[in-house]
Image: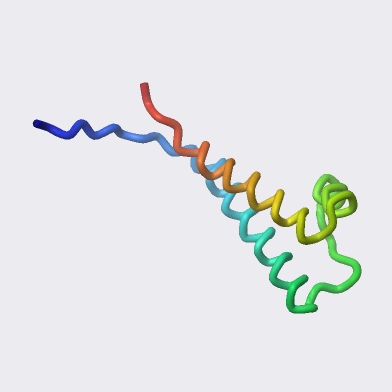
Length: 79
């Protein structure tokens, strides 16, 4: 019985963006929890809207989940 190995293609740009976005979300969450986050932080306008409507904790959670989704989809299965 042989094990069939599938070769996976990696979308490196998408993976890099997802990891960078995840690190940013974790950093903002950690700074918020420790009180090291100032009242004014420079973030892109789209992320600012998420933080404005959901708050910092839920906003970083949504941001982390979306970035994990981006990371997972950067490894598509070959047909």
